[in-house]
Length: 380
Image (cartoon, rainbow, N blue to C red; front, side):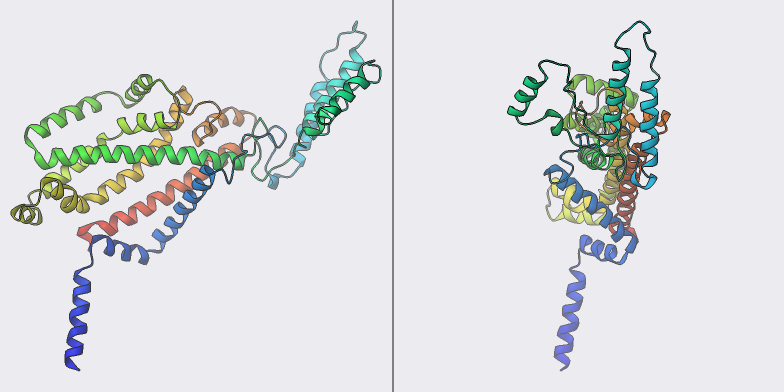
């Protein structure tokens, strides 16, 4: 009986001793409710990203489904009706030519066109006085039916409203999340990989290697960030997600380099690294297997910070014409469009993009902070 108890105790001790850094981090994260909630929110965004990339949702985001600036549903249809009445009144108030014999007919047609645009009710444009009206209508029916029947009835309200082209703000926000998350995440990963690799080499080896990489670092930091971004954008001379990722990733690694270099300079002389050196472990293994897990929380925090910063940078690039091309939507382009809409009192596109961005950034930052604490060896 005692032997069985001793075996169980020894087994338990061996299991505890075999728990690695990541296993301990997982245990701490599971015990942190805020971290789990933040992880759930981030995973929901990534699920939306995958569904959008595969075309299962928001594939028709650029389709006109509502009247221009259709308000959100919770504001009611009265706002749309007021907009419709004002538009019709504005058309009716157009100046008339008193000597024009067709002024009454033109005024009537303008009113009918405005009514069609705000209500979605098709108008029969085949005039009874046109001698070719019957022939045109017959040809039109042979080609597949009345052309106006192909037009979709425009809605006066949507769940999150519509922009000036009548596009659904909800679908536009989802599609914009695809672009902004990809740009922010891929750019941050590229910058962290470059900064971590160069910082590890500089801090670990020191000497002339450190001098050369510090000289390279000083060149990048001596140039104003915005000018550096524009210079790289001018060299690439292409618009698209890949170009934005390269622009931001190749210019945003300097902060990561500085922090990782300082950490490697501290850890390279510690006992566990010297022990690994004594048993013949290679430089690469000492840098990225022994030292890096102890400084990985620095890289994770930098990813969180850079994701937020690069989403903001994408807004600046889109505003200056170096961002996403025409026909591609992102949170940055939505915020750019919202500037002119606010003058007209149309705030729902700004609110949708801002709320979607704020929720993702907050959840991502909180989860990264919790992961940093779980991976920090000093907090064990």
